[in-house]
Image (cartoon, rainbow, N blue to C red):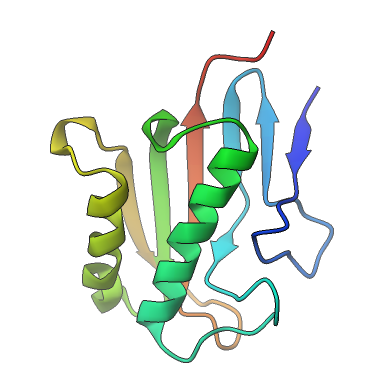
Length: 129
């Protein structure tokens, strides 16, 4: 049975959508965005939003009992694809070993008002007994 992940450390969606879903060791996130979970507002800068989104991704992984090394694919959605360089700092912090990084695809997208960045991730780990 699917287990929905709703983390208190992660901004929640307006719609009835969990932060992620876990089933048989496969974790798929919904959009994780750089919105402050306490205020519900987006920081003004793309750099702040990107940093917050990566931190929230780590919180979702932890809550699901998975780790960064379980991530096999990341989709990065930018309002300005030129902001990819801002994501690389966090990418290299979380996955410092180039031989053990997940696949990654950057997209330019129309995002909600004030939102500059979103992450969607897929992870595979050993299912809990």
